[in-house]
Amino acid sequence: MTELTIPPDADDKRAAELVREHVEPGDIVEIWDRDRTGSDDPKHTGEVTALETAYLELDGQPLDGGSVRYDEIGMVNRLESS
Image (cartoon, rainbow, N blue to C red; front, side, top):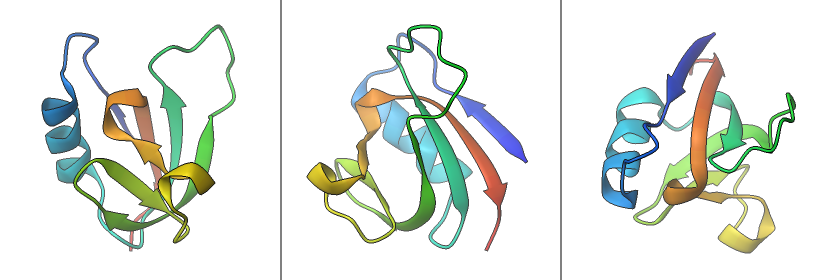
């Protein structure tokens, strides 16, 4: 398992760059939101199916169906690499 924490001052472009350097399609990831309120559970878990311009696609789902915008990502754990 490898972990990436997005710096709190990173804008959406920088967050996207960091995520793209850390994961690739086929990886299984856990994602925590930037605005975590004490929860130890990931907000999203799934397989990276695409690195879209504005969001990280998980399990082939659209943004409103389970994928997550880069500017909402606080931390990414890569559980399995493709």
